[in-house]
Amino acid sequence: MAAAVVLAAALVPAVHANGPGGGVCGTGDVLVTICAQDNSRSSGSSGSSGSSGGTPAAAAPAAAGDESEAPTDKCSYDRVDPPPPAGHQAWRGHDPADGSVYKVVCDSDRGGVVFLPNGQNAPAAPTIDPELVARKAAASMRLEPPKVASPRAAGTYVVGMPMWMWATPSPPTFGPVSASATAGGVTVTATAKVTRVRWAMGDGTTVTCRGPGTPYRQSRGKAMSPDCGHLYERPSYEQPGGRFKGTATATWTITWTAPALHDGGTLTETRTTPFTAAVHEVQVVN
Image (cartoon, rainbow, N blue to C red; front, side, top):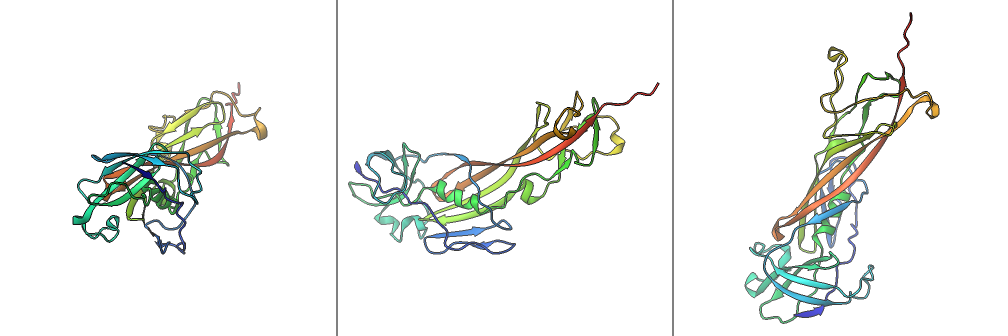
């Protein structure tokens, strides 16, 4: 089965949410319901899983007006099984007895969903790619860089003594943050949380921590941090400004699902906070 495939155009919400608490940030063809506090633009990489069953079809060049200028693309049409419930937007107002809903997957990783009437010999145009909807949900989230509590800019650290690194966690800086978006019959729910923080210490070493780190208490003495620590082996005197310059980079993992299509995947975002550390040698007096 072969036909020209019209790929989905980029989604542009008509209205953005105002103020804390979220709300509706789109009208018309795109409706975005925000579960986060406010909005920020972002981008990331992703992966997705497919559906079962269906009939493959080779596609012709993308339609005029598509911004991507994609070459001829080969696509497969997989019937969604079990199908979405009656009345779901994927049916586009059709009676489920009159046809089936198919997921379209192309070699270019673009695709979407489409309703095909019973007995139709050629596929219709896919309406939307669920990953694009997921990206719109992710773009509505408030994802901030880590708030570094240690090392402190005003602190002084000692060569060979354990340094405890930690960031102050909050929903905007560590999650979880959730959002959902609906477009072209596809509803996507996305949840984001920080899965690791990579500390570049400024001395050529890096430390990867799986959480915000543990705050230091004087009762811990000279013990190493149980989950996020470092030892400087040389002082920072020769560094610009007499300080090591480092960064704390949080990786946000955004998990999204399109339940009606039995589809989902992940996107990743990173946010970075710079820090400095003044590291001195212990002065021994004879």
